[in-house]
Image (tube, rainbow, N blue to C red; front, side):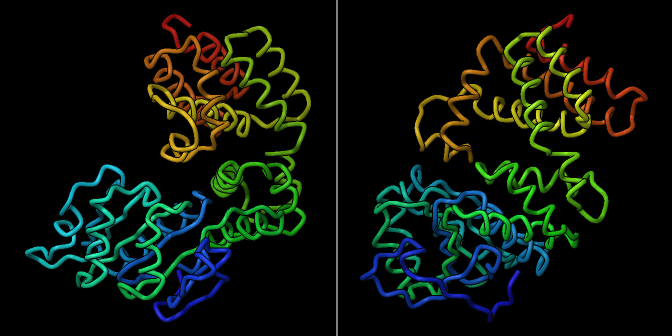
Length: 352
């Protein structure tokens, strides 16, 4: 978390601001977020935005544990909600109001937000999450021109490997851990297509790996062949092909796959299926609301064929038990994995 007085400026084109719009407020990198009456979090990269907003919440809560946190959806907003949440409480607790989806905001929200900029509430931090598009441009221009004495946090999509390496390195720095350059390159190479999966891989290593992350550790968990085999096992099991999944599991283990990242591969896919289960609609808007990429939503819907909510629940319980088993709760991690494959292949039905 940057100090309250630090600021880092980026170009208006990177932030998504109109070249003609006057930007009179600090523009910060995602990891340099700091408190301000109004914090505009712009850009298409949801993973960075989530990290940044979480850092801000944790910082404010560390300053005052009585922090009240409220969430609003800009598209379903009703007139007066913002002013009600921002109004002083009896005990004067600080407020954090997070508004999601400003790029699809209702007219009522835009009117209230513009009014709020004229006189922000004391001890209140308003976070405006705007991904892209022209909807809400008048509000964005007002914030960038200095209305509300705000700051802008730029969360542009990371396209270059160097940018992704810096993101991953920041994850380890924040946890007080070290990863050597070769290991960092190998990790980013394994997950270069999906920043959310890269972030999950960083968290997995932080939770389970030794203090210093080396290239050998990354290869053990996420080497190209091992990663492919792990997801091949998960794909076969989720599709109900029990025999094929067991053969793939044995091949992966014989090739040097470690049981812990094998379970992580199952968890990634089942967790996404659970998010998508029961949802309606399609396209980028649904994906954004679930913090997923559109292709992940499409794949999860295909994977859900033949599954029930009860089956998903049993699969998630089996995943938790297997995760504990391969980390030492049971003597035979291979048997625990085979048992998990059986539960997943039967789509969580009773008697599996």
